[in-house]
Length: 547
Image 1 (cartoon, helix red, strand yellow):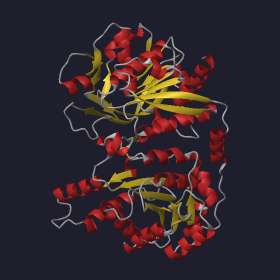
Image 2: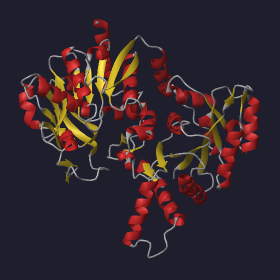
Image 3: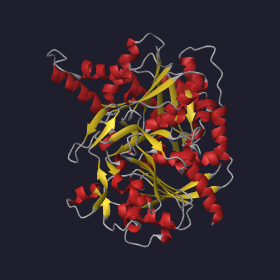
Image 4: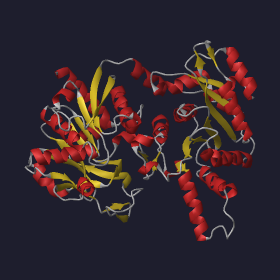
């Protein structure tokens, strides 16, 4: 039977609950415990899959094909535990499940209410896999007091009440604002936030207090007294140079010990922090730096490419260099000269995206990297743009394009080198899709196998011929153009096991030019950088030294 830690937030949003949860999971692992982390989001969308990146940041995809909150990326990167479909749920999914049961008659004609039917559905979700790990960490999205979050707070209150005593604790994140005019940290917002929690029947066992200034001892004592927690359970969370310093920072503040004390686990196993010491050392002690340009369409919100940013930093750690990222809006040079914008960078990355906006700029970026021999990594749409660029400028197909853009415009002026995938094999089942289908959950999602070509660059990078990577897309490169493009130096070095779907391309006469249909960034970790990103940064280092 797992022990449960429920992580909530108060005062303001964006305090770092996801990071605190992930860091705590890593600390418990360092003490020899097994963990799983979950996210319960109060919004009414069924999942983030159809939400704009400007609205919610990136969509993190699991091996089993769930489209989830980006916090699950933090969980995976810090703990190395692959997230599952059962690790993310929203109010929309909960209410959808309840209404489906009502329509089937599962409730035997009873009046359906938030309590007990909605809260029971939430509790059922929380309890999945209860016997698989030592600790289950459940983060509740939003802040206490949000009206849409009330069913979740009631559900975790009930869940704790239903469990044996000592099996659940509550960790609450708050803000200690600093007033420069008086030179004081103010504890009153934290007191009110805890009071709000207590009013719904939840008493925090641990308080994690975000602060820009050091928290004096007397302020800790005041918070402990007014919020009814032990002084040792008032944990400071300060700003860090890197998120990967969080496990060590929280350990030094005593967070993991406070959790074990709350569960009365004694004697506590000694932590092994060697892995995180090495990560921080690689960040702090670098042998140089490289400059990488990311040419995308959501560049005004960094969270839209969160996993890519982290994977690039992991590649830097693998090579002991600092990676400087420059965001470049692909639309800037759609009608302008590209050189002034991309000259001077050691590598170019074109990420995924949906829709035609910005694609002209991405195609130009792929062409610039190809012609100027600059290391290039194209991910998902970035691979498709590289293929279209090669088809137009090398293969003599000037109208090469994608069905995705034809459908948007309502015409068929372009030769669809990239087409809408209408059927594919997932496991042992055939999946079929139409362009007019609902958008949510209708893509090729989750982990799929690929076979790499002998002697290819990617086979050398991976060190194997069989890989599996996570996908999230509706459109595929048409294999009918493989033979023509390969004669021109475009190697299709990775294919689906049945040989139908191109997974990876690379240029033969180029220092480093790779496009992948999948999202390798989703599987990268600071202590286990993804091989593609590690080698991409290695190539960028070589490029910087040649300039």
